[in-house]
Length: 225
Image (tube, rainbow, N blue to C red; front, side):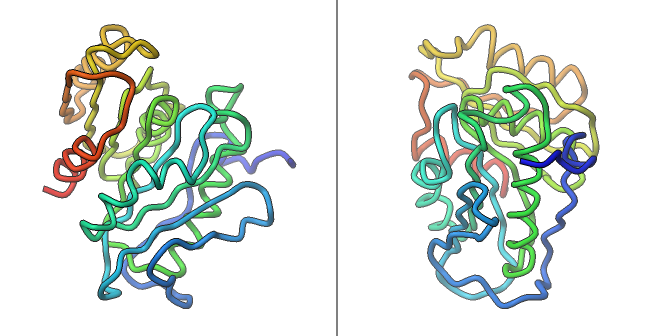
């Protein structure tokens, strides 16, 4: 793949979805976006009117893909009238974790541009699970002028390349997580972000390294309240 444009290499997203898309509308249901064969990108649009609706961008865990993201959050989100955009990482996990921002940021930006052209959007949040949660926190803090909220399910860390805006943060972590232990991950990350002045809601639950419908419901309720 060619070198990423400078904004992508710096972790900056340029797409700005809004209430007045310029292109033909995306249909209800799941659509595969055309990203020139680079990676898979899926957008799930709820049934109902085509007025502006919330958009959740969701990042999968290590070894996952866009389909797994939709399986984790799509049903609960669309039932609440929230559209979901999911992309697959170019490598086995996200570029920030495999050596530096660029490739996956560019893919996500291209997918967001397509969504912005075909979907009326009222507000945008960025979420993810495991490595995807770490990525969502890191990329989201650098793009808080786009994402009003960050929804992190079992994150390991937050390493933003820069900071923009003041997104609200919701973090959930299981007390029996054997993959990313809660004490050095969820608890530590939430304390650090709160100390940095972010509005943080931390939900600790009796469970392991999972995303459950109940957690997704809580995350959406916290964001949309």
